[in-house]
Amino acid sequence: MAFLLRVELPDVPGSLGSLATALGSAGADIEAIEIVEHRADGVAVDDVLLELPGQVLPDALVTACHELEGVSVHWISRYNAGANLRLDLEAVEAFAAEPDEALERLIDVLPDTFRVDWALALSHEDGRPVMLHGTRNAPVLPDDAATWRALDSPRTLDAVTGWDSTVLAGTQAKDREGREFVVVLGRHGGPDFLASELARLGHIASLAASVQT
Image (cartoon, rainbow, N blue to C red; front, side, top):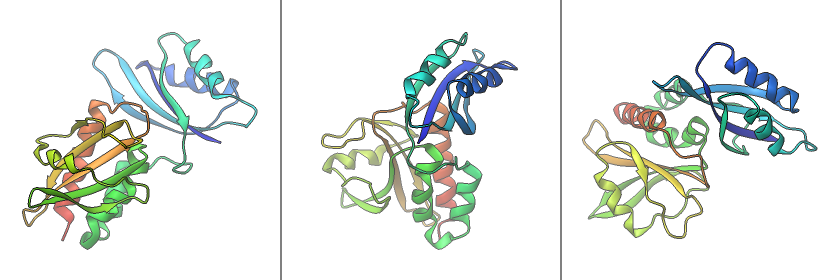
């Protein structure tokens, strides 16, 4: 079974190797590691995608991490998006290759890129939100999505009543014709969106908007 582990650790040589050794000793087979954030206080946040045998409980990984000095686990959950991490560059290549459908391709690749459960894009007509494109499991737009029109920067959003996703983020962008759209991502339970993830979301949405024809 594939799991996604988000972990905080000292940003010093050797700490990532120690983490990998500890996870391997606990029975995990590491598929990929991606650095999510470097912090000025000497701390890094990494995402680790790994395979875990059915007889090994995820709690064993948490225990192995916490036995390392300065290491803490932010989040661990089943990872259903496939056994690879999609880099931002690959996402850009996906929508740049089809400029007439850049927005659709962006939404399609965002779940893998940001390890979220779904993504959608919406615009506003006569003050009401209109779905432009969403992943297969994206929820129905709520009426109060109209408030998302005023996203002057990428940010986290308040939870929506009736949605399973409790951790939301959104950003606004404008295409070459001046048409505005909003991109929203959702996670079921966590982890929380980091400042670096919000910055990446704003950047990649703007790139898609600049490509859209």
